[in-house]
Length: 112
Image (cartoon, rainbow, N blue to C red):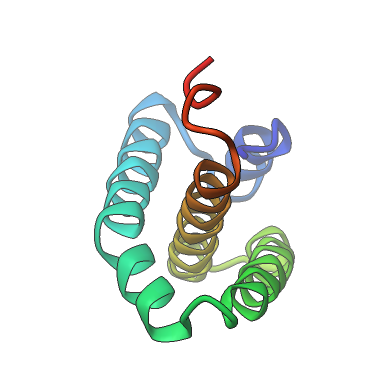
């Protein structure tokens, strides 16, 4: 989820140009890939089947807090750091939801 306010906010606060946005979106893409490929597996295994709800709650909390911090700071490094947490939380959250959806749907319904 990339809110449409971020490009305008980054341009207004940090004078982001096209190359800055390209670097930022590359950072987001790489972070998301790492989140789904490495972080999500480890978090799901650590939480176990019964702990997934707590994992979802942690991820939602990180999404909210991270966005608040990123929107209200005047420090670009803090924006990147908060987006590191936001994107990791989003990657883990999406992986948990996808995995659970795949486990409750009948096999003949998956992928339709």
